Length: 433
Ligand code: GLU
Image 1 (cartoon, rainbow, N blue to C red):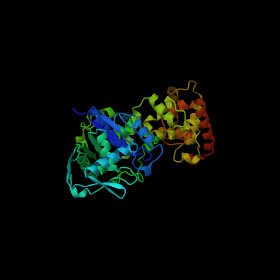
Image 2: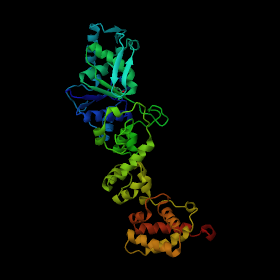
Image 3: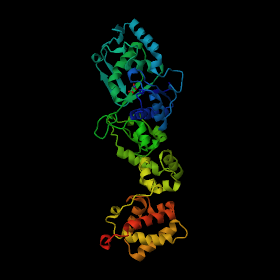
Image 4: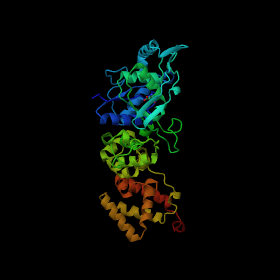
């Protein structure tokens, strides 16, 4: 049996594109499932668009998502170079070979393929039979006058050199495939299998684009998406789990992957779904892991207790800071905050009293002291705790407030209540209502 060899060939344009992550996911799954080799080729033939550090961004982005590859510029194998710019002489020699055979010709410093006019057909592993008339192919340029190969030429030469057996790429390349097939014919080499998956679309059903959409993988990392959630999300785009499952990891995706389950229609990149998945992954992390992830990015020193309190309330790590802020910074509390909260002044004065009497500052004692107070005074529970939230955090949406008091500590809680008391003390009874 021939070993399966696949490749991804991202262009180093300055950042790792979400589309590259998607190409990688499908190639990775197909390859790992079939025990093959995945090659990373950095398609750097567009010299005008060369950007410093772009290659590193690709490595970093793909590694962050948990992918690895068997050969590439950073992992030499026996089929290199893995950067086309390093094998210009090879493309030239290959083009000369075609010229000698009468299948290419020179034209104003460039070299063109001589179209045979033959129809080109292939059985696409996702889309079935695809056919292009020979007239559509034209005498296309294979080596530009600057000595660089065109995309179609370097792709075929590289795929032959690297013994690629399966080309799995986006549907935007379907129209390139007939030219590539014509080149395989000219070289007398059996072409690989092709599979063209659908292009990812945004909520407006438009192709994801650099100008319109967040396509840089780093943006997802900075926003606090977990790599496992993003991989799971990408795995649901244009593919469905045979058991209808929505939550699965990379290993399970590999195990269940089948090109037959990839749809033809362009899947929608639905960020609401991504947020939902990300929330699930955040909730399934341990306190220790969550603290580690938060402290890698948070401006605060997050403790396990804090992480445990906010876990249920965030769908992205980036949302943590605004929820944690009050632990570190005393909130600015003005009277207008308490609008619509009945008896807030009385809540503060009485809470100050019972909380200062607690000897042993723990959750149980805080709970029972406040429950007793609410009962005795006949407070509305919702209003009372809203006052506590506003006083201690300055916000209406907060982590569980009694638990937060434990973390804040008795002195800090009493001090914040005293501050609030000063602000609320002169509220007229009519205002308090
Ligand atoms: N550099 C091309 C791209 O990023 C590679 C296409 C291919 O896989 O042939 O679209």
